[in-house]
Every structure is written in C-alpha cells, then in structure tokens.
Length: 283
Image (cartoon, rainbow, N blue to C red; front, side, top):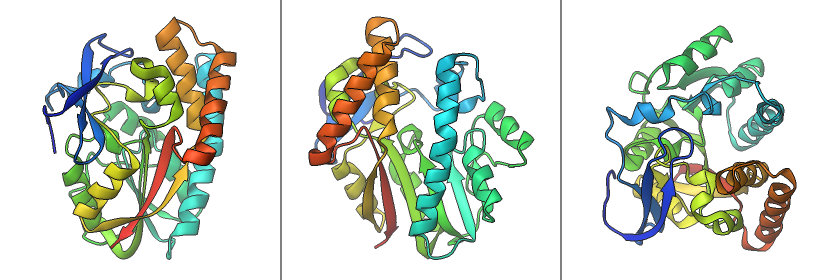
C-alpha cells in the first residue's frame, strides 16, 4: 500500500516542521484511513526529517518545552514497559522498530530484556549507541518467529508500505508473542478541533492516518488480530500544544491544556483518544 492517489480530499495540510509544502489528505473508504498525497519518493523522504525540531531524533533540551517533553517521556517509557510486561507471556526477546535514540530499549534492557532495535536515522542511531543500545537500519537480518514482544511507538504512520511492514511483524513474532503499535487517531476530538493545524497529521512524515477500523482491517489482512485498544492520554495535551503553535504562531499553554482535557473527557464515552495503543496477537 503506497502512493494511493484515490479517495476524497478531506483536508490540505502544511508541513510546519521542515519544508512549508502543502499536502492533501485523501480518505480511503475501504480501510477508513487518511493517506498523505503526494507521498515523497523513498530517496527524498529523509530530507523531511532533517530538523532540530524533530524531537524524537534528538536528545535536545534547549527550551522549557523540550525539557518538559523529556521529563514526561521518561515517565511514559516506564509505563510502556509495564504494559509490555503485563501483556507478554515471556520476557525474553524484545524488538523496538523505529527506536529513535534508544531510550525505550535502554529501559527494557535495565529490566533484563534481551533488546534489539531498528532506526533508519544515522544521527539517532549514533545517540543510541552512546547509551549502549546498538540499532540496525532495518529488520531483514532478524530470525523468523524470534521475538516475544515487538513495539512500534508512533512509527507505523511513517513507514512507506504498511502492509509490507505488518507482514514483516508477523514473520518476526513468536506464535504466542505480542505486538504493540501506538499511532495518532484522526477521529479524536482534538483532531476535529484543530483540523488542518492538528500537529499529529505531521505531513509528509506521517504518510498514513489511522482509525480503529483501519488498524483492525490491516491487521486482519496479515493474520493478526487486535486484542486490546488502550489510550495515550498525554498525547492530547502535547499535540494540542503544538497545534496551537501551528494555528496561532505561539504555544498557548492554557488553551492547549483545556483542549487536551476536553478531548480526553470526550473520549471517556467515545473511546476516541488523541493516540491509541493497539495490542496485536496472532489470530
């Protein structure tokens, strides 16, 4: 699934991080997902990540925002590992795809997991190596059915071919293993509130924009099933803060907090949180 130019145009969104270019979001009715169009060619995609503001590829703590981000991130990493531990039968081999600067795997390694990871960005891999976490560029060298747990924390929306990626997850996963996929949810209230300024659209780095239906259907196509769907409540505040900056030129903390809180409150009944974690198992 790549460069699908069919579908109704839902929104036009600007790349606020790097290029300033405008992209369209097309609705795929079969999977109930949005597709960024046009999608950059593979040999040019990396240029859209070349920014010090792309925080997941750096350990920068230059501003109060970045310092708060890393403080909350540290708490979230331990919470993620607690979730992984509670949903896996064996705590032996774990793979983190799109591992960034290796922080999640560092936490897992400290808790006695055998850790493996991939990250396409050279600078991020170098930062990870400094922490004692060696990352590969991609997954092809890993054995079949080797991992008890595979994680993709806000990564699936970046991969050029979603179906190929899910097929690879199936190959790597033990028969009784568990996959954890966290992605933004374009059906959340904060997405509806900010529309084309919603920071989690993050075009063109985010090539796909998922709903519960799309993840379930895509998983089913590859012999996987969604076992649980869990909220990422902090994301509503973080995304709202960035969305305020994109919409109004500055981060209005109070307005962002209100909109994030309102989104989470609404999701108590709709279950459409700003971001969701999908727990997948073999079907």
